[in-house]
Image 1 (tube, protein in one colour):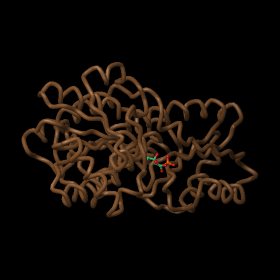
Image 2 (cartoon, helix red, strand yellow; image 1 turned 45 degrees about the vertical axis):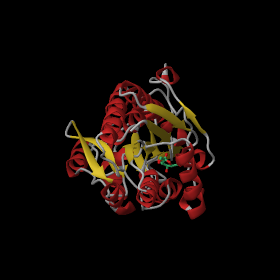
Image 3 (cartoon, protein in one colour; image 1 turned 30 degrees about the horizontal axis):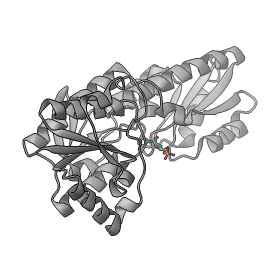
Image 4 (cartoon, helix red, strand yellow; image 1 turned 180 degrees about the vertical axis):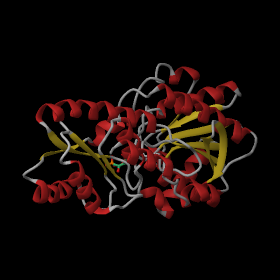
Length: 324
Ligand code: F6P
């Protein structure tokens, strides 16, 4: 192969730049010309494509966001959108492509790749860590560290006022951000979609610990938690425990998506970027590259998009034990 395109799509994630950099540098290393496709699949359709060089990715490894920009393209889901993108593949004589993103990105890649017999390899880039076939996605480590830093600060003020805080974190339908940050920040309770324990469970634990002289309580609520939204949960707790707990709600929001990528995310993205280019050179495609048990592994798009990674039972057990 002689020409590779690279794009980032879906919600941006810290470390995407490190991934772009690795794809570009590995391409140049192997005498392949890299092309940057801006604004995800929208740019693929609208010909927002330009040649890149080793220098195009200088000084970006430490930057959050994505220099190629991102989008959640609805046009790429249409027949017409796909055809337009294919015209651009021909126009720029692209032989293959690397896509960095999550589930939706891989679904689009799988469909496009199958339809036009075009080689594509995916790199999991999302803060949610909700992709099957890799232990961690690019951006997750930075995001949980951002959450822990914020929750540590909330702990200070919560303790000063003896308050109970509900902190809502991102993760879409998955509770990985909540579980990791909850354990890391020493939360009293972690509410995740994977373990729907109902509000009753939360009531029980608040009841049980209300006798203890705890100066603060933190409940981490995953945005995908099925019980209700964080304000409803707070209201229910107020109704029942209003006399015992003063409650507050913080929704961390998009702060979780930004910031300098952690070293772990930079290393992960660099490994995956190089592996993606090397796979394409060997003629392997239609799959996602991830790291499992510290080794680079490939999972076909079909599996990666159909299956959900399981929440580690051991983590739930640990969270339970240490939050008594
Ligand atoms: O997938 C990443 C993510 O940040 C989710 O955690 C969240 O549900 C969603 O994207 C928010 O998307 P948007 O930025 O488009 O509102």
